[in-house]
Image (cartoon, rainbow, N blue to C red; front, side):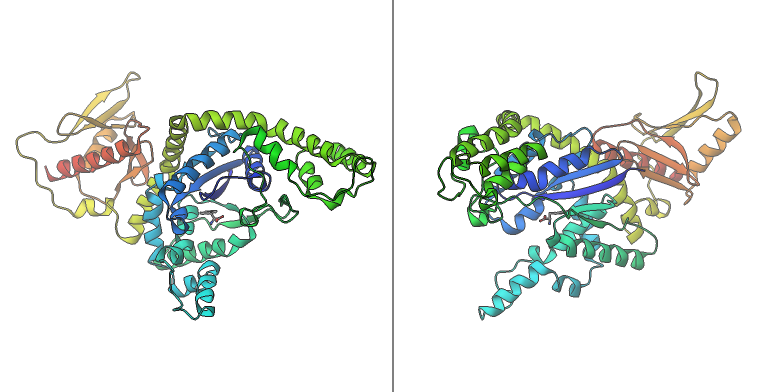
Length: 449
Ligand code: TRP
């Protein structure tokens, strides 16, 4: 089975060259590997924890989606979606909240750091801290556990959150019995490149030393590169290649041979201006075509929207049945109520009905129709008409042996664990849910009649 790799991208800010080299490029490369089933999503619910400005949240979310797609993310292979388009995530978040120890959340680094800051400033420990920040790790656990991800590529600062997700999953399993979740593991990129910025420190918005990825166009890129700090050695003077971040940035966009030649040229007196020109040419060769794609996507937000909706549909095809099973496990299931609930027969003589027929191959099948005549289910074929009859009789009898499963794009009816009938397929999860509801109603009517 393919390894499911899942990671979230917090939608705050606009990506710079350091984000591209350190996170975006390696993640896209990893998603292309064979045997990897990658889930990449925009953690826009998480973004609300820090950001209060709706316009910035919206812009960042849009720019990030366009950036990942323009940088080559294959949205057909990868499941690429927005967290806020999958309502099963916050739903799971609540189920997990109710098994999470408050003491566990007290120990979360981000929350603790805020408390420590308040204490140091002589303030109330919880001053200015939202419950959102406190709950951050549970929402993140829901992101991961909803999809049974095996591997979660994250930075070191996130390891604690993955450990908490495991802890929360174990508590849930312990409370409700059974194996409800895959235990996720952090995947730490030991060698992931940290790109230095203009001044040689790590490239970061908080140091104000970034080179923008796409913003500002190729002129902006050239202008930023011209501001990389170098010493004052003139043309022809031997230079120390390690005296500036120019060389490290060059390395991230060149082959080993090209990198070696570049160092040598500097040692032999290549002018800084010329070196910057060469760096610009390398970076531009890689990201120029991506920038064109980015600008195109930014000009057509409806294309990005369609891709993300498709991603949400794929994600929900897993999350909807997962949550149905989890609701069942905690006692909020709908199927378990089915046998017990008394149902009034609808007024008039119209009711749900079963209809037998022989298919093209001469096999015996039946259909379930709703009171309004809508076809709901088609049975599997039976060679023996008696068996087909017994199966129909089972559906008329209230019994726990009959189970409805929402399989994401269609509904299955199982009898004693075996698929007996299935609905037609629908790409739209809402349509599938409404169909599921209709089937339950129809079965209730059959059993009441
Ligand atoms: N907290 C992560 C970060 O800041 C982003 C994130 C949200 C995430 N949900 C996730 C990462 C789930 C991995 C899995 O980097």
